[in-house]
Length: 94
Image 1 (cartoon, rainbow, N blue to C red):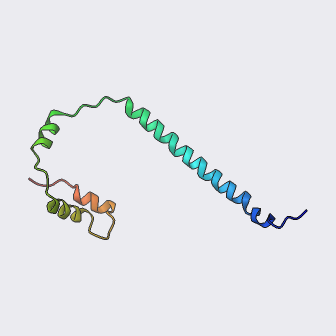
Image 2 (spheres, one colour; image 1 turned 180 degrees about the horizontal axis):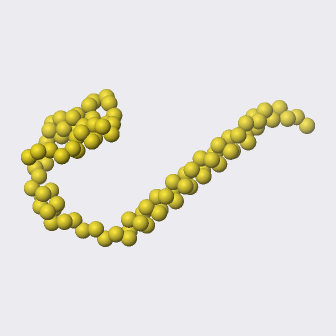
Image 3 (cartoon, one colour; image 1 turned 45 degrees about the vertical axis):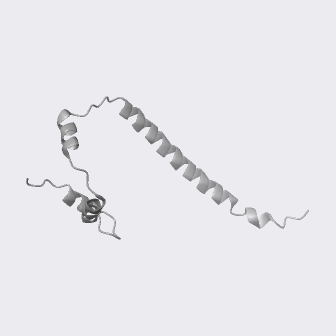
């Protein structure tokens, strides 16, 4: 009997364990998602009138304005960090 292809199976156990660990992680994430989805379904949220009025009164931005505002939050070629987000959303004087 010839076992010339046996070396191909040498790493099989390690690959199987790696896949098994990934599968457990995926299963855990899916279970968490199901829990959050269930928990969210327990709430019956309705928007407050003041928010509806505010959002209806806001003028939509054109593409250039939107891009400019986006670049303030996240400069081109950089990821928005927590500090940048906190600065952007800090209370402004009106």
